Amino acid sequence: MTKNDLTSSGGSRSAWPSTVAVIGAAGLIGSGVVERLAVEGLADTVYLTDLRDNILQAHAIDIAEAQILAGSTHTQLVVGPPPPGLPVDLVIVAASAPETPDGDRRDFLLANLRLLRILLPDIERLAGDHGVVMLLSNPVDVLSDALHRMSCIAPDRIVGYSLNDSIRFRAAVGREIGARPEHVSGLVLGEHGDGQVPLYSTLAVNSVPLVLSSDQRDRITADITGWFSRWSALKPGRSSGWTTPLGVAQIIKSMASGGVHPATIWTGALPELPDTFVSVPTVFRDGRLVPVLPTLSEQEITGLAQAARSVGTAAAEAVEALQATPK
Ligand SMILES: NC(=O)c1ccc[n+]([C@@H]2O[C@H](COP(=O)([O-])OP(=O)(O)OC[C@H]3O[C@@H](n4cnc5c(N)ncnc54)[C@H](O)[C@@H]3O)[C@@H](O)[C@H]2O)c1
Image (tube, rainbow, N blue to C red; front, side):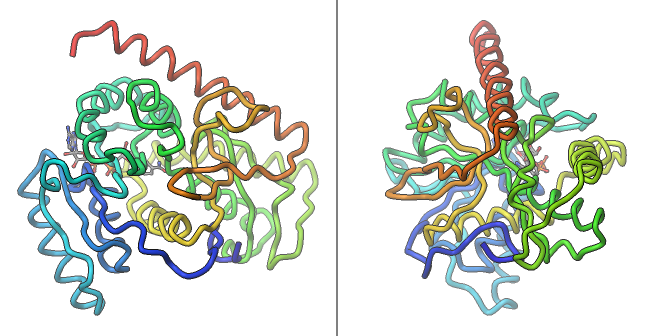
């Protein structure tokens, strides 16, 4: 992995993904992702869907003009879904019920789970037999697990976006030691929320391993676990619309080139963890998301198992509650 990003390139970019559908493409994150895909030319065709068709049309015009400015008009933007029977390589779900954050992403669970149930037939149709589904909507890990429980999509074709936690870890370490965060590397695994597991053993500054005192670690852990409360207290009425689309583009490039990156994936291939979805280092191989877990300390494994239990229980309970309510 390079010092400036949290993904590592595995070589030249493949033709994947040729086709992408973004559900919720009129929103802050969805439109930002479409902009990155288009301006960086990361796909041949991007389909934009949302309830708000007029906003979609406006984004498509604006982004197509930005492509000219960027000198990158390869990616074709289509407002609306692909023709029936034509699945896509990658379905990105950024649709969300209106959110008023109050310090815990799980507050969005019931509303976004209901929305996921509404979107499920579209997601399954778009993904077909081979497409990957990338969830962005929060709480991303619980919803990824719920999608697996409710759908016929193979669990190793579902991935949640969780890169921001590692970026915030680098920022907090930089603040603590007075280093520029882009010179810091380090990974956060586990839950996209309070159950996150910072891997202090992966920390380095300019590729030199960084050893911190336990006081420093405690301060950094408090800093990163407090991020969402601090953000919510600002009442900004928006989510992380700059970082997330950039991060999604980075993850897609890493997937396309066989690189390793943190992502929320199925833990079924990891016997040390209960079956659910948490963030682990991941590689995209033969159309499947595969975990590549480094050697972890006992404390880190315990933290990861705790996060997995918490996410799995929340998903099971939420899906059961949803199934008891009428559609
Ligand atoms: N995983 C992460 O790291 C991360 C980072 C940032 C935001 N998020 C999450 O991403 C989601 C989107 O955030 P946002 O700021 O773009 O929200 P937003 O409110 O700006 O956009 C949500 C969009 O979903 C659309 N939508 C609602 N119901 C729909 C339906 N039935 N079909 C199609 N579209 C529908 C809305 O019209 C809206 O355009 C939220 O859940 C947010 O918490 C996750």
